[in-house]
Image 1 (cartoon, helix red, strand yellow):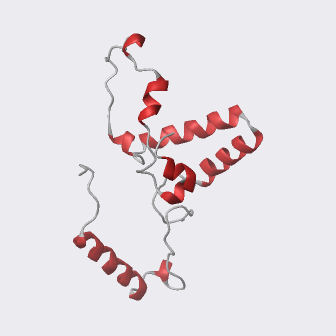
Image 2 (cartoon, helix red, strand yellow):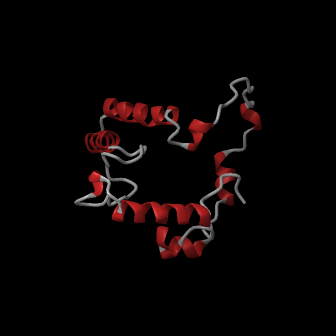
Length: 136
């Protein structure tokens, strides 16, 4: 169960009616071609997304060239997207008055990874051997 709800039948029906109105209406912007939609492609009249031409370009150039400065530019763009409410974290305010946990109270990484199991992972995301081993 999640407190972040998805769409219901009412919203799906409203979107279908909107598409129909765009297809058969008189709006000049749709006279010759309807908007193709999509989540990642840049749309002149589309909604904002985290993945823009600039963010994708910066990430690709940073990783291909192993360029920390370009990666920092990419990270800044992504982090600023939270301010435009494009991410869930942009909807939250974090308290900064939390006290640090003493290092001796933190479980060692070697112990934590013993509990990692791959049974919950999709077979398509890992190899058959890793999927069947059930432990890392």
